[in-house]
Image (cartoon, rainbow, N blue to C red; front, side):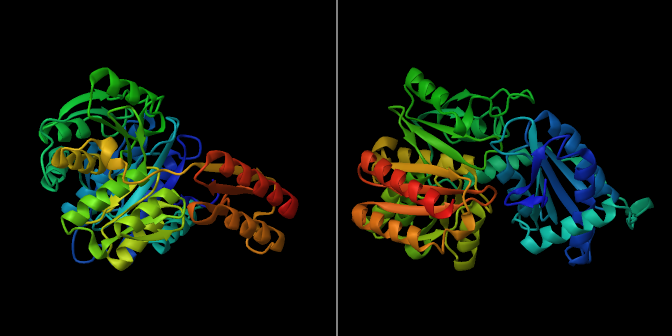
Length: 452
């Protein structure tokens, strides 16, 4: 798997890349590293452990729990809950560590391990590096220092986590959802119980699909990566809107009453205006990545809201928000962070806030989302090129400059070297789709000739 920790924990094919032995070893390593860092000083440590419904999560959870308890950490098992619920519970229960077993939107054979620090925040990069180093050291034979007797960790079920998280969600809503009919696609994932419960208790009439997880069907033709089913269900039931989660429910996409998709950029735009009205949009600023649609940027400029853009990845959005105290940020994929109420992207919270805006204004989601116009976007992957020379090729720089002059203020060019493959991504936005395709095609040809 190369470096174990990626941008979102450790992830791979369960029982092939990600084994029970690895899960146990990483958990023991995490406990030791946090102890060395002083996190456990002066008290008996506690960890919150949750998972999504994948079949492999059952044995991986057992391995994680065994590893933590063997290292002297008491464990609260919260069962199947969304990633943001585990993060929230880690913070609200004062736990020293949180562990979530999920591979998010990936197919069922994959799984992953994500660690949260005290407060429910993502572990610092240096701690992840140290955990990986300690894990590798002991995997090759160095013995662990293990507690015995009363020093071993105790394990108990924490069934109250479900209600505690739902009550948190309801407690931060600005208004109820009475009168709304909402379709929820749970991706047969971690929010299959939580999300319908929260929407119903908030007053909405709820229709659920993709809410029968069996351990094998997570993300299978449903959820935020497959919107056809929710579009059909919204039309069939005459719903006001639809909310589609991914497998661990840390993000969502939406569908309006006509079946039109409402993506993460549009959700951010709607929530930014709503939060500004409530004086909750600190510094009147929203954070997004450089891949956000130009239409979003133009809409925020028109509305007088400052946009700060980061590198691609929710971790960079979160870092920017935490560093400068901003309240709202996210990605086009629907990973939205409302930092006053969550330490990570929370698809159920986002969906509730979006529905609350519809209910509170009496306006349709279609009308609210029209605050921004999505400009046509064309993406071409150019393989088998030297991605390291994207920023130094004069031929490429000249071609990009020509393209930007042609597109003017209503277009945009973005060239991104892949982080994992020998390819360059060419993205072009323009007011006209044919112009976007033409410019992207020409730039892709230049990338081939200049970097091939």
